[in-house]
Image 1 (cartoon, rainbow, N blue to C red):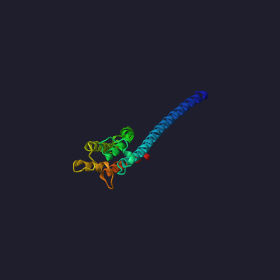
Image 2: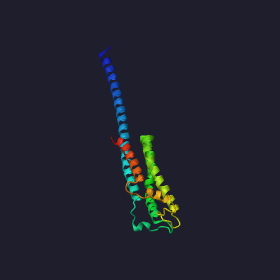
Image 3: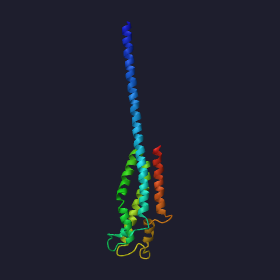
Image 4: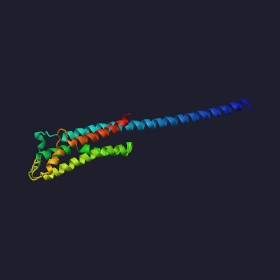
Length: 191
């Protein structure tokens, strides 16, 4: 073998090694980029869900507030209890939030899995419970009855416990617990 032939062989081998090294570096860089992108998406979703959970907590506090303003009964149908109308109006004004709850749960399931998404289920159940209680109270108070007519409709006392916030009430405590569990789950993805 001649020196030129040996040098040619060495150059070919070195070129192949450089190409292999470049391919390995590109592959590693692509994997790093994928992990970073996934981490960024998880971080952004966790942050959005945390913010959403705060909005949800505040929405429950606002719709259940015992204090109502006079203008909240404007447009009330005749024969409907004022309090029920106020709670229904407040609830309906948050329809975008209630709709977003399902979308958020699906997004959490896609990115974090079913176990994380299950943390949103109690909150969806609280929304459903509030809505069904509101509809039952609306039906029970039609025809001029008041939300406060316990003697005629015993269920109204239980309905008030869900519809109206009061210090230390079980419904708000259950909502707060559900939100705290969701927030704990999302904080795992912020690290």
